[in-house]
Length: 323
Length: 285
Image (tube, rainbow over all chains, first blue to last red; front, side, top):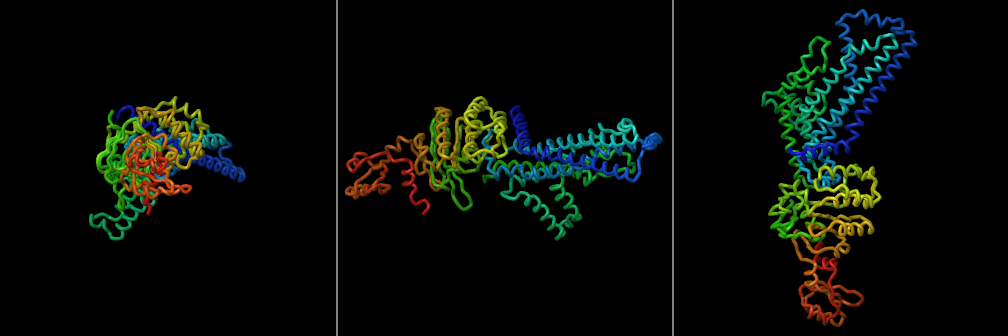
């Protein structure tokens, strides 16, 4: 890697951002905006309904007393509840991010072949490897980073809205906010990005190779191929030959090839994961928990498969000749 | 100086057809070569091979590189304008300039901005808002600001009106071309390029049927305008083409001596398009 290659990569990623500003930037921003709007509307509705029915929490400082009467354990529960409120904004963004990355990858090496602008990109002294890598970086770093930053801002606003609402009911806002752990939440979310990138590797690789290879309808190929094979495997019970249940194929091949771009699927389906302790006070996205996934063979086999698929995508990018 | 392009036994076969049938040719620096042929003759395949966009058989050396293995390096010295529709539709003028300026080591931003200043293009304008002529202006401004050694134009003026077409070639000649550069151009609008070409290459069914510089073409091919009474005498000399204009016959001869033709009527150098039509007779039959 010399300086020009790095510079090329930087500008290629910037190029991706220019082209996909809608998906990478506006989609999370608008989703976050809608999320906040719905929350505000919800709170207003609750307030109005509450006022109409003569229920007014804490007007007499009752709620404040409730908090004052809590012991340390209860207080930490409140803190975690607030953290969940912050994560909840991310929950919606994560789904949007999954869709954005999925369709971005499918189009990344196909759209410019379809509109023939590949002839322009290929007339520049940029290697096909750099081009494909820039798309991988955009999908697994740029898009999630933007989503997380937006998620953190939305989460903070959400926390603030909650606090302000409660303050109308006589609760001390600052005391409440001190119970939450916004920086830990931030840290956990940012720390999850590399895990996401690794977990998404096989899906990104598969979608990009379909995108580089198919002459038309990359979506159909990308989805129909694994699902079709999955159906055949199910129908003929092929997995029985390996003493594995049919579900193994769906979980480890179809799911990894298509759904790994959705953040959190790793933590849900990753093998050695999920010993959520009975202690609900535990932070759900604590990095010590989420990074358990890094010990799962499924993650690393997926990374290897992803790299192989990407090598294939680079090869097709180089030689696919139909513009 | 060594050749810019050396091809020997360059071949490309598709499933059902032969696009390039083991052709060999050489292109010297400082030339403007017209690569002319009917649709499907293999022009674009030849250009794609030179640009490293397609695989092929045989040997091909472009500026010392093998386009199959070193496309990205080669593109530092080669520029390429395919027909007008290849600039990405979402890109803005300023983004295109920024991007090329940063990935292309031989790009001169000042030069590009100077070219753009002579057009109506605005920095914030996107390609999708431009007319075909404006897109080509943008592409040309980008390409002319690159100090490349080889420029390849594949139907660069397709679908443009005559003002843009004239301006395109004029800019190219006045502001770009010099003895260190080489241009290869394919086009169907032969009349517009014939006065700028230094070399002519006809390609038909994957084979090169004519490869000569324009002076040699002028000596080899002679057109004679013959009165009806002399027509049989002219036919006896085996012309490669005959057509009728205002009661006179125009014969086209390949390699006949000027001295034998002059008594028959007025001789002149044939236009490239007449030569092309005569050479390609029967292509679509």
